[in-house]
Image 1: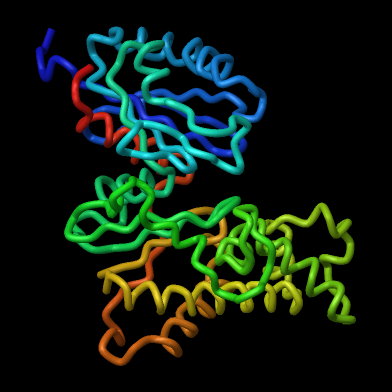
Image 2 (image 1 turned 180 degrees about the vertical axis):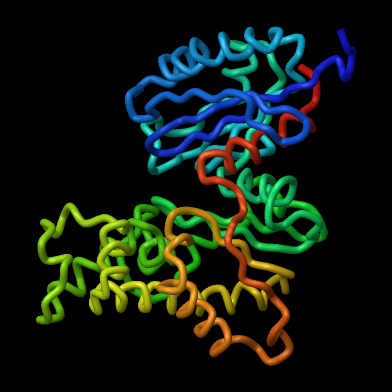
Length: 324
């Protein structure tokens, strides 16, 4: 048998509002095996940790057991890297402060680090994706919400409390749409997948013209429907992307003024809507950028598969984690 590193694998876990996906990853960034549980099925955190562990243990065993695992990294909404806790996450079933890293360390017996889900995606992009070799970039995740991971000088910006860089909760319209965070007009309410669906409902009420989207009950519309309609030449759907892209581009022009990144990397389903959203984003950035930044920041789409990115990024934390 070839003896390489004595601990050749790490575990990566992505906790989403809908699904929790976890996998075993090798040092080259290959996701070797994955499994998942439904996040929302567990109202008690103990039941959740038990459910994940019962599926994760056999995966770990099939690669030689915990002796072969260097560490585990977890990406979670409102994840605090400093404390290994999830704190007051609005889209998760467990309230308050949850010491998740400690719970998993105890259950699985592997040193565990935890970070915010968008930070995990940024780490994945920097280690294995479009941001390889970059020291300054901003990752924007466009999912159920809008998340961000800000890398400055090769390091994630955590702030003094572990929560820096919530660009999805920068207010882009004063007294705008109600946000789940309790404030009004956050970027997230306009530029997340949920925000696109909200815009669709508003446009359908405000505008009289025909649209393929009128064939769907308004409350059932999702961003994918808007994309499908746009591809079929639906003007209203194309205008929804135009509106969404403009707001995002205006915000990105402001973010560039903050850290002058080499690139902004967009990640998530919406980023795959091609020119319908990318053109208005680019135009809005160019129209709103301070002169000194013109033509300097690349706008890129993530190179990582949606399923792998967060697991990969979280797993990269596993290599860094201190021993128990």
